[in-house]
Length: 85
Image (cartoon, rainbow, N blue to C red; front, top):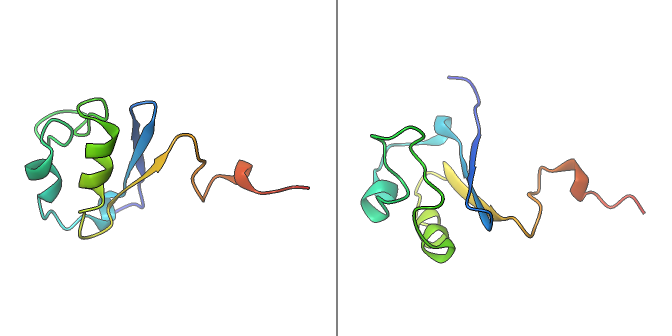
């Protein structure tokens, strides 16, 4: 499987999904089905719940396939975050 990363945002938080890491524990959609619904395309609806509930649920992902960053902070892999002073 290719190393794919998908991002979904509600404007405040961005959910990052790395499918190759997913162990299909189903914790995400059992815990927050209004955001994580494998029967929908796309399967992540970042506007389906509050930012706090999304963060809390993403933190429960046992494989690390789901992660997040706050949009007020740039993700670590973003080259614009480097300090060029």
